Image (cartoon, rainbow, N blue to C red; front, side):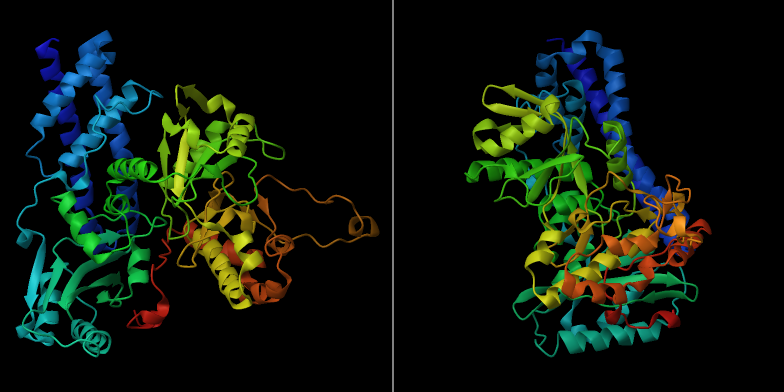
Length: 575
């Protein structure tokens, strides 16, 4: 093997990765300035640019390697030798796990649909493979003997946003009061009590978050402090101790944070001690390294396959017209494949469906749309596939299947968190649970609208219920930007012929929407219909939808808070 080719390949790969990290950090570094200036349009655009950065850099690196190597670019021997050389070159990096994933991404674009090749890829390495640096660089520490007032005042002063507070003293006392009520009524501070707050601020949308933990009562108690920047200045909005709310802040339904990360594995380790029921791949996603999150997910999936024996089956719920969906019962994920043919009235193309999923990936999901990972050449063991599922796959997505020895290779698939379809949930839950679910259902539609997303098909089968009983939209083939839709009142009939016409007697364009008709299909369960119609009465009013459109068209970014209003320190009108 030509050593010069190996050396140049390694150099190009490292240069490509470093260029990606350089631009990733540069874009991330803009978040504090956007927050300071309340420049929400730039915050949104910076986030979008960062999302497309990785793929662009992978393809740019691949193009350079093709120019350098010519036909040798597809040599397995070359990549095997380059992997060893690359591995030595990145050993001392603080982000070497990300560098390994970048290498894998370039390999995957070299050998499409051939699956994972352990000899030439980093398959089983883990997020904790990096050297951990002194923790004092990661967080501020505040000893208990300072007293609560001094600790809170020091925390507030340690995070200077270079913008005046609306009422700093009031914020400090809000925090002191909340800690006394929630923590000090249950635990007593001792000489071992200490508080740690990550030095990096987590920015997302219009908010900044401080993340910390206090060692008290023989255990770590995590907390999150959200700050907002309103017309009157910066203010602390609340103090979050509830682990369910904290988990939701890091949910698979939320956009990624903009946060300065020097050592990703160390940051993930700290977050894992705070957001305890989040998996490693979810935390990498949350801090913006979603491609490595995809790698960690795949590693977790491989480990689970080894430790389980159940079979892949067709997912529960009404079968879709566009997607074939299956799952492994013991694993909390569904696999979604675009069908070979779409049944009427669906008339879109496969590429149009992929574009919808891409649109969701680049959009603010406001806690109401599920994140997905896209895979090509995904391997499943044939003997783990249920016979009914195999028939379903052959009948609906046969062109995307390839059989090789004991493996089924799926040419293209999306993975997504498994949820209980809302229609099935409503069939079996109690009346009170159903009322809460349909309130959530309407809230989800409204919050999506405020994020400029119109779901299109709003039937309950296209929404899921999470473990925390939140309702999330997951069927993206008909989504559109809200501002592209034309919301109308239904014309009133003026003649006998119009009243009894079998078909609408008025012209209907492709983007026309009649909210008055939503009642016909939104809720089927009789005992909660009236509750839903009353609770979400505005959903059926075209003027309400038009008012949201007008706000968006005027340039307003309508912020959806990822925590309930009742825990906020101040009412909305005061800020």
